[in-house]
Image (cartoon, rainbow, N blue to C red; front, side, top):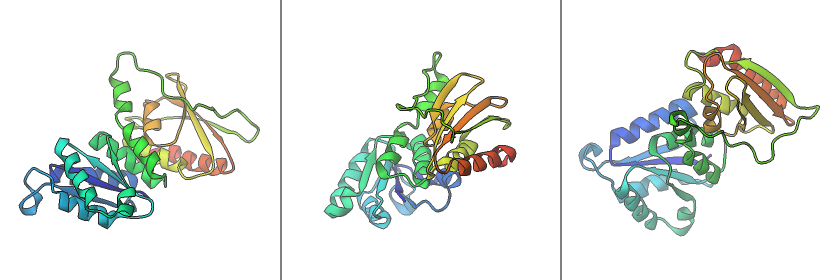
Length: 243
């Protein structure tokens, strides 16, 4: 599983972000913080040596994604990379994603077992759902280039979102994790707003549906594990996503 390192000028910011991701993605995700300087890391700044040590501790065959907050955090991280051997350096990806939103998106994707490149790609989409929500003329969600064609083995569900605040971050995470890592493709259309169909491949795709309380979702699932996905989603809807 891809590991994640949070590099920030503020230890409290980085630690708070890590805790948020842990709550959403699960405790099995390997994460560390390299943030702040001085006694107890409470002064504002970044330390290249500390970053290097964190990268060594997180090093694994699946790789490590690094999220950074401000300008000099990138410089410190680049210096830290020079302290690693060539093989360790090749397993590290520095992400240009937004720090908090990117961290949450990356964490959920990593917990789904996605490779490093896909985790970084998901992190880079971290602001997309927020941007579309605040735009006066939001663009349509990106549809899959080769949409799944209806076939006899395709399962189709139509379910109503009952959560008071819709599919916000926590239920959206559960929705994405029910689909991730399974041999099936899931396309979802928000019948109430006309958004979609969207290929669900992570947290951001679910958020792009903009599903609010009362919205009807059409869920089409194709593949060998379609029934397994359908059963898990059905349980989530029946249990109001644990809320």
